Length: 348
Ligand SMILES: NC(=O)c1ccc[n+]([C@@H]2O[C@H](COP(=O)([O-])OP(=O)(O)OC[C@H]3O[C@@H](n4cnc5c(N)ncnc54)[C@H](O)[C@@H]3O)[C@@H](O)[C@H]2O)c1
Image 1 (tube, rainbow, N blue to C red):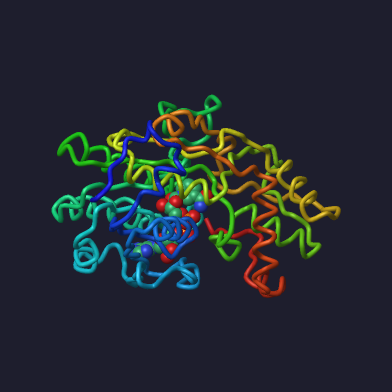
Image 2: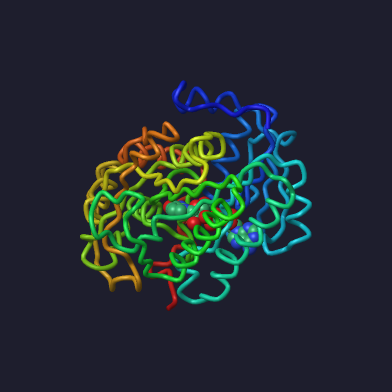
């Protein structure tokens, strides 16, 4: 790798702009956060190989990215031969490919295979191939519900879903590779991300895009449970910048680092914020709680601030406005966007 910078001398935005002649592999790079990470890497002069089997990702998410700098390989991260090929000459692996929380409710074994076992295999493969660094993108779901807020990285990990458990297993393997082999690994734990290309559809659908599209269409916003659950939402460009920084900052190696805004909001209050953004009265309806839903999540992001110079620069309301503008600019009719809207988008 050409450039390794000590972050202390620069702001995050300044020093990540130094990335040139940097070759990275982004698994899950056709997905929501992955495609934003790829965009930021390419914008800063890096070359990127994306591996994604497109089960939830879309090639369209990579539209507008310089094809000379970004190659999409449609493959499964469980395919050893394909992964060995994709890793040739790579400086940093950013491992984001995974199956989500609602998938884990109906297919726990496959969820574990992709999220945990494939992570272990990728770590072995990356180390053998001489890849300089491995960044594992975990999740705040490893904590389970907050026992204290804000949650720093020493907070207990008691995941409530197989998804959270499988992400925790992936983390443990990643840390073990650092402890056992002195391999340069980093674990980041994003809290809930939102923004352009987030999932509103099917069992991948997340609360902000679902609420926003329903509010725009004048449909009721469906809150699972009483709406007092709280979440820490981070705009996707901030989340991706934090992940990118974890691939560069030497101080991050061997660490596990939260990526969150440090501000939490209840789901009920979120619904009202969305009502304010769309500028019309909203109707809220309540449904059964989702199985395994954690009650509270709120990051202490001070470690990310000190090791990565991470900041959550986009506020919740501003981020929702940007997402609304992105939907409107896409020109896709609301009926099309809402065609695959499933209110209860899980099968337990
Ligand atoms: N979105 C959030 O709020 C959030 C919060 C915390 C952590 N994360 C983590 O960030 C990462 C990215 O999440 P996202 O929200 O962008 O999800 P996403 O579903 O949009 O992205 C995951 C990508 O992985 C791909 N994929 C799934 N299984 C695969 C396989 N077997 N082989 C190859 N590719 C496969 C999917 O097609 C998809 O493009 C995940 O690791 C997730 O755990 C996300």
